[in-house]
Every structure is written in C-alpha cells, then in structure tokens.
Image 1 (cartoon, rainbow, N blue to C red):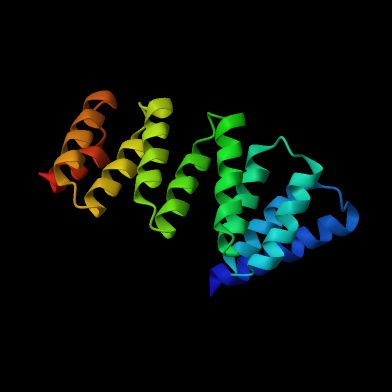
Image 2: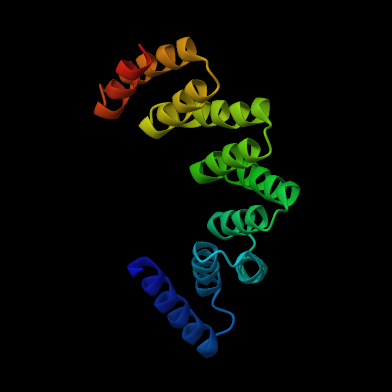
Length: 171
C-alpha cells in the first residue's frame, strides 16, 4: 500500500517534470521504471523509447527500454537491446543480469548461463556475480558446480558472508 502510494507520487512528479521539459530524458526513464512497478508496461515502453530517442548512448535508458520490452512480452527486442548494451557498454553489469533473467523467462538455459559466465569474466571479483551464477547452478540442479563456484568466490572475494552462507548451503 505504501509502495503503491509512493510510486503514484513519483509518477505525478515525473509528469510535472515532463510538462515543464518534455525533452528531459531522465524523467522519461524514471517514469518508465515507475510504470513498470505498477504493471503498466505499455506506458513504460512509451517513455523508455522516448528516453532512448533523446539519448541513445545512455546504457541506463537502454536497460529500462529492454525491461519495458520484456514486460511487454517482446522478448526478442529485449534480448537485442541488452546485447547492444553489452557490446557498447561492457562494464554495465545490470544488462548481463537482465539478459540472464530474460533468457530464464523463455527457458533458454544455455544462453542464460552464458550471460552470467560473461559477467563473471568481466566482473569476476564481485560477490553478486558469484551469487547469481551459483544460484543459477542450484536452480538447475548443478549442486557440485554451485559448490565449486561459491568456493572460488569466497577465495576471490575475501570471504564474503553471503558467499560463505551459500557455500554452506551447497555442501
């Protein structure tokens, strides 16, 4: 209830910003995220497309557009947009994770794993990469792979508590 009220307030605020300056790309991107929160994917996509039209080089705007495509059921467009981000902005972690999630939604396990493995290549010392990939291995009944990955993550990420808990769960 509180969350819905805050989201509605945010939408009103972004609408006011856009009434003042319809070319303010951040407001389009943020209102798109708010519409995604309320389940209004068509409105989200409209604003996400506008933010990208105004600044096509911004990976955050492209990411919001990809999420809007995904929530609108346009998985191929979402995947293409996320791949574009990965190509042009290889250090933008969210695109790898969102690509993974999109592939999981369409049950493309091999490409889902590929997205996380690529993220691991680039962001190998970040805990969230090990947790995401390890969780994927657990969900796909690859417990030994999860255990080995968590152990590697603990070694590389200075014994992070979340990784230690995951390693204990996988053993």
